[in-house]
Length: 158
Image (cartoon, rainbow, N blue to C red):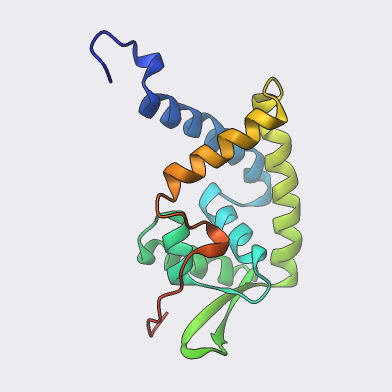
């Protein structure tokens, strides 16, 4: 922050504040479905790739410690929303895959979150939203990777 710059112009503050506003909105929308933002994020990321996603990739994409991912996956698995299956490319790894129930809940949750966020984005043009998304991706993934491109290190025991 520059000297004499109001807090409301500080990019870090604005990003954090916007994130908090959207996360609270999503949490309220997801609560009736029995989900929280992180568990929804796991369901959503896993659902992007029908072949499954490793816990390591989930951790890297979400910016969480792998132990946090284990707890999230354990909870979703106990609810019948995801399964762990051997990775055909490397049987030492486990792939997280949505069950049919997980796919259905993911779709419903996506709609609920989208509806909850509509009001926040209503005054912003689609081109500005697209530009904002690209800029945030550059900050969130400075090495140029995104969810679909996150490298899969070969590590046993996932």
